[in-house]
Image (cartoon, rainbow over the protein chains, first blue to last red):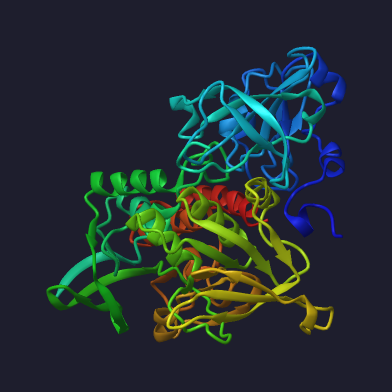
Length: 171
Length: 342
């Protein structure tokens, strides 16, 4: 079976961990941090401009991949909606004993409701666990990209990257 | 016959940018577009654009379109809509067919910003209703507010195929999968990743074999291909779909450039035969410029930069800007284009 984003469209964890925008496990355990899943040299830099602590650096050459300074990142999540590729997530392994909090962009209707239990999917769209919606943030500065905060069992924190598409009846 | 200094054919991202750059100098500019509205493909681009945060990056395409139109309106740029240019004659006479009849515009400079057209593909059943360009499906969803169907198979994994798949899902249409002939996905990994998260499979090394159905598409048959581009017979898959979208590339709409006698180069990477142009976007035919997809298929961000350059150059050659200003602008735009073209 072919693996990797060029073959299947979905990046593998191994591919992502090599990226300059992917933080260490140790950093995720300390608290919320940006996880930048931007694999290719795309001429694009809104993430850099969005970061209030200059934790994301691209530099003069637009097509360089974003470099995350995980010490400077405060996990504020401003970069999530700024990324036109919807490739930035926030992962917090320091939320509770058993749960991790992840944040991701979700641009489909209907949106889930707060406190709703929903199907959480991995990078291949496969449902791997249940998650509880903590918040759905819609701010003018997000320019119509809602950000979902989802509580999931800790062991899935580096796998879950979204929720399953939902039907109009809210299921 | 009406007169203008600069006539721009095509009011998409390239044409609008050219119009703004030229009209800001004080030049008399008119835009001609065959569609009901100006903006080209921008108004159906509901996603956020890549690019530099100095420019429009992170903005959704339709909002960029609105900004360009607002600038044109402020500058009182004349826009002829539903006007089809049928020919360009020597000395800059443009013949256009408008809702009021045939008109001639006499222009000193002409910028061709005519864009591109989607490529088609012939296969058994490809003439059945329900087979359409991905751009057509995107127009239905995002401009007309109509679902093109309920179940779609997308052919082609370039950025158009990936983005339109995502937008079909946003419109509540299901996409059963994306078929890609090559062994690797053509578009950006972030685009493929976001549709994979939504559960859409991508079949690399697969091709569409047949559309089946009585008077309309009811099924699509795809098959895997081996290294010799032969179909592996036991690999066929059938999907119940009512729509098959083709996203297999674009061809520049260059008829007017051919008609003017422009010199062409064959550049497969840019889409096909491309009119030669100098660093100021002027073709070998004096006073005829090109910008946007007609000068090589690319993103709207590229079209806007090229349009701006063509507009500046045309205005400069009419004496509205000085050459030092044009040179400075050109070197900036060239740098940006180098970044964007990579």
